[in-house]
Image 1 (cartoon, rainbow, N blue to C red):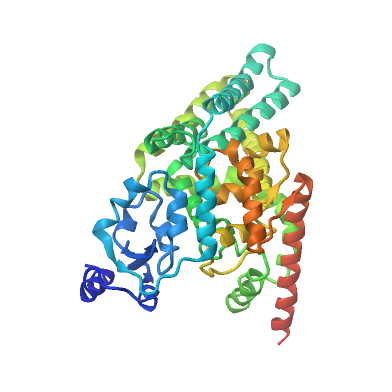
Image 2: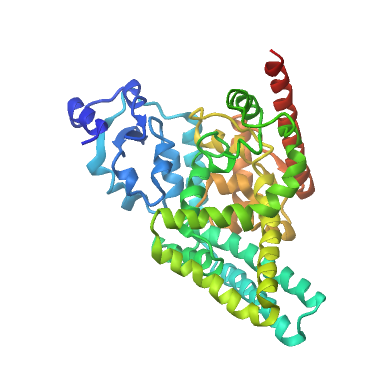
Length: 442
C-alpha cells in the first residue's frame, strides 16, 4: 500500500479532509485529486488511466472538477471508477463562481446540441483526404516522374497527411462518435496506419497539453527549454540552467531563436524529432502490436514508390512531404499558444487557465479548413469533446462569459498570428540575453 493509502486509512473513510492535507498528496507515489468537492486517491489508478499517469499527476493536490468534466463524454460511467478510491469530502469546499458560470455555459451548449456531430461533415472530410492521398500516387502512374508531377504529388500528399492530422485529432478527443470505442478505433487507424504515427504516444502528450496548456514542466509543448525559450518566465529560469551547467556557449545565443526556429523548428519537427520519439515510445513501452501497424504505413509507402522513384527518390519524397506537413502543423499549432502566457502552474480555474494560454484566429472557410477548425482554439480547449464544426457557434457565449469575468478574449487574423510567433520568440530571446548579461557579468 502506498503512502496515500496509509494516510487514507488513518483519516478514516468519509472523514472531512482539509485542503492543507489534500495539497500534501502531490508526489508521483502519492496522488490525491478533488472532484466536485470530494477527494480521490488516484495513486494506483493513475498507472492504469487511459490518458496516462502524468495527466492525473498534473492535478495532484488540486481541484480537477472542470478538467474531469471536459475530458469525459460519459460522466456517469466514469464516476463508477471513483467509488473505490473515494477518500472523503473537502472541508469548507467552495465552488468558484467562474466555474459555476462555465458549467452553466456548457449546459446551454448541450441544450443547443453543439456536442452533436455531423456525420456528413466528417464523411466529406475523410473522403477528400483519401482522394488526395490516392491522387498523390496516381499522378506518377498516369504522367510519369517529372518535376511537375513530383511537385503535384508532394502538394497532394502533404495536404492529405496534414488534413488527416486534423481528423485524427477529432477522433482522439472523442468528438465524432457517441461511444469511446469507435472514436479510439478510427483514431488508431488514421494516426497509426494511415500516418505511420503512434496513437498511444499522441494520447500521452496531447491530453497533458490540454490539462495544463502553456504550464512549464507540465505541458509537453513547452518543454524545449534548452533550444527555444518562450514567454516571460522561462527565459529567466533557463539562464540559471545555462550559467550553472554551462549548457550553451556564449556563441550560441538563445536570442537568435527566432532565426534558427525557421531552420530547426517547422521543417524538422515531424521528420526528425517526432519520428524518433514515436518509435522510442513504442519500443520502450513495448507496444509491439501498435508498432507493427505503424510500420505497415512505411512498408506500403516504399513498396509503392521505390519502383517509380528508386530508393533514394522514395526516401527524399517521404522526407520532403513530412517537412511540408511539419511546417503546416507547426505554424498552425503554435500560432494559438506561443504568443500567450507561459508560466508555472497557478492552479487557475478552468476558464482562466485555458484563456491565458490560447487565442482564436478569424473564422473563414479557408481558415477553418487550413487549421482543421483549430482557429477556434479557445473553444476547443474549453470543450475538447465538442465536434469542431460547432466550435464557432459557442464562441459568442464564451466571449460573453470572458467579458463578465474580465478575461481577455483574443481573436487575430491568420497572418498576424504567424507574425506573432516570431515576435514572441524574439521578445523571449531578448529577455534571455538581458538576464544572461546581468548575471554573467556578475
